[in-house]
Amino acid sequence: MAKQKTAVIIGVTSQDGSYLAELLLSKGYKVVGTLRRTTSMVHENIEHLKGKIILEAADLIDPESLNKVMITHQPDEVYNIASQSVPGDAWTHPFYTGEVTALGPVRVFEAVRHFCPNARVYQATSREILGGVTGVDRANESTPIFANNPYGIAKAYAHMMVDCYRKSYGMFVCAGILFNHESPRRSLHFVTRKISMGVACLKLGIKNPPVNEMGEPLVDAQGKLHLGDLNARRDWGYSKDYVEAMWLMLQQSEPKDYVIGTDTNFSIKDACKAAFDHVGLNWEEHVISNAKLLRPTEITDMRGDYSAAKRDLGWEPKVFMKELMEIMVDSDIEWLKNHQVK
Image 1 (cartoon, one colour):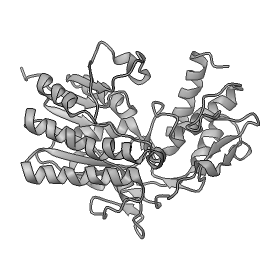
Image 2: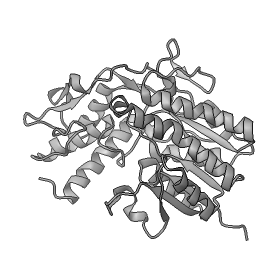
Image 3: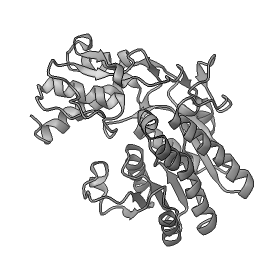
Image 4: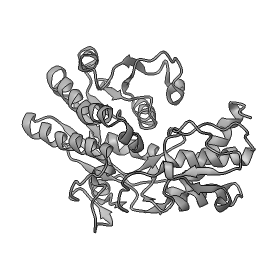
């Protein structure tokens, strides 16, 4: 009988971390998930996994905590999903973003190098590393890195360090250049979840909606959902699809980096229309652009060319923007009902 594999997921409470834990459990892995030490005992994305996975307190700014996890569990695979992941917050917290999103992965690589050097490592990078590239409508693995915001620049550093550790130490480390991917487990700091939760609140007539990152109600007293640049365009996929690509990258004979996307491109307006149409509402009557939510710089329009992942990994997306928004709206309607939000 083959030895049971052990996987460490750094950032297991995130949308990607939780879906990845489910996938690995289904494949018979022993799953160890890390989370930052807090006083909260509730982690909504993984409540259903408690008792099925091992939880360890660790932090990307605390190398000793990462070392302890690697020493204790001797993983076969390590997935670093954790980061300061909100591009908008990177402008207000640039030092923290650099510590966590740029240097954090290096602390992971060092922990693996010293204490479980045969482990295979997946590092989540981002389409944001290509944020300022112009004249390219479809990005692939050869598209030049040209980040244009603190989050993207931090991710670019991590991405380049992946190649450094591969070549310098012969480690099996690979990066996923993931385009935007969403789910009902996305936080309310991200535009797709703002849209789906806003639609759910309007559909149910919620008087006390959740608040946005500015601490203001997601939907105001006039029934308006406040968003940023409505013309910004994104390639949106489904997180549950994307974690499968992460796993497949670590099953290959050689480590390589891959672009993971849907090769489609939609505006914020398009996402609003899909979500509002799903419940019979007109998005134009409820959505406004709020200047306080605009980015200082906006990333260029681009689609993720996943042809290399399809060729080498046999991976391709299953869920696209319209269905994704419908899944998220339905989930948020159920969430509000179950939590008896009025």
